[in-house]
Length: 464
Image: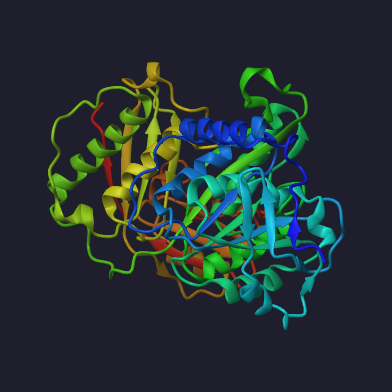
């Protein structure tokens, strides 16, 4: 009986000897930079699984988040799609460990045994034998977490979101457990078309879609289930980066047929009660603007424009912001934010500023020569209020043009518009129709299960 699953794609998807592999991993992690400090590690990350020369820099954006948790994450639940052997459900291996050029990774046999009673879980080694979607993650995990973690590898085939979510619920654990979902994005589209497709897919991931298809993400089956549970657990998504094989260094790939890659982290919600971050608003607005601009400046490697900023108590309280950038013509240049107050306000505005500048899939990353002309706007959100409506007519009557931001939700579809959008869509009917299209639905769609929420914002604009 084989007790070790040997490395199958070492030397092809990643370097086959330990020294070269460590060097490659170090280079990818260095390119990712130092992740911002956080009170807790991400609970869930989504990472690509192509050869390192194509997707390693993107995967490293997520793995760099884990370096501070060396020794504290002791179990990794790793899910990826099957590429070679069909599976009904989720396949767990029977071996004792998985091997890589960096050494063996022990499996958590006790955790795997706890899954045996679930009908969607099968014990089978063939789906794992040549599967690269799981293997390519192991050297990164070994590099950032060391030898002190055990692995629960699951090769996911034909499985519903609920079946996957049920497995993950059983393995959820506490801060010692990390969940990793391995998935590339679009495949073999022209560069510009892939950028548009992957941007839309990432937006759906950030809004917890559970109906992703294989042409959007090859790991759709494990990803849909993970997103279903992530939303139920209140995790807060954070986009780390989106690229494709056409962006690989040294012209390794052309741009006629590219593969998309994305890295997303899902953070655990803050445990503190939500308190009002609007206190001292006279000082808070300019301070949020300054911190947003400072975060972008640091990412660009330029000197921040201000000295020491006020140390306001509100910055340490949970807060939800959107950061919007406009170019010197007033055109949108990026907009990223979060609806839930799940991390300190200071962390939220700085993270969203960097994401708006460099990771909004609708725009190329901000350049240094744009730095002085870009204008920063910060929207500070109130807690959303769920609307008790049954019909679209009731929904339209409940919205106050110019005042309310709106969240539209139906099954896996979710989208929001800030109150500023009323400036372009002043009529409630056209506003809601456009919001439904943003959620991926028809403008005239309505269903009894639609959930609408409204919220107000405090908007702070940088002086021109």
